[in-house]
Image (tube, rainbow, N blue to C red):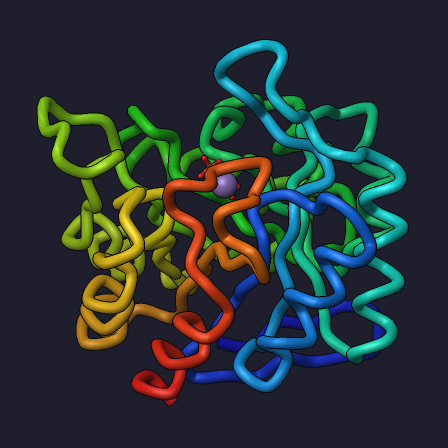
Length: 245
Ligand code: PEP
Ligand code: MN
């Protein structure tokens, strides 16, 4: 897939995005990013975190954006981070190369429109209880504002099955790609919630002809402040990427 931001272009047949769920400190992001810098095309890290339970770590916000920008500049890597609120779109677009719209906001139509007004590529996650049709309609809201640079991300949907965190809808991801012509990537971290499933699901995404993956990794997975159960080590991350390249 080919994405453009500012005066840069990322052109990769299979895009690899990696980094921690949340930006926790300069040390945490820079150590994590440095360890995987040779493996990734785009660095991820959340500065604004949507949390199911109040009282959980909600991210460093502006301080997190500043850390992201600093680490991105030092390693010369483009970045993606989530924007949760229409009021923050301009700010997040100043600090990050790609805007992420999270699963819980896939049908936040005002947020979709604001992201569509920027020149930033948008990583649009599928709602955890959204159909493919609803997902593509959400993408249309962004496109209708003049922003055609959308990367769709299948991150698992809610089903009766509880053995994985969500249920990866790989077939739905392929349908979305075929119907929209947009690039579609897979998020094995949130889809499964299980470190041991991240490698096979990453390989499956590639075998299915999809356009990339986004994986959560942490330099000290046991200490991750957000989504600790699904965090993989940077060594594990690099070994998965070596199978994909
Ligand atoms: C994330 O990428 O950390 C995240 C919150 O993802 P999702 O919106 O898919 O749950
Ligand atoms: Mn996460």
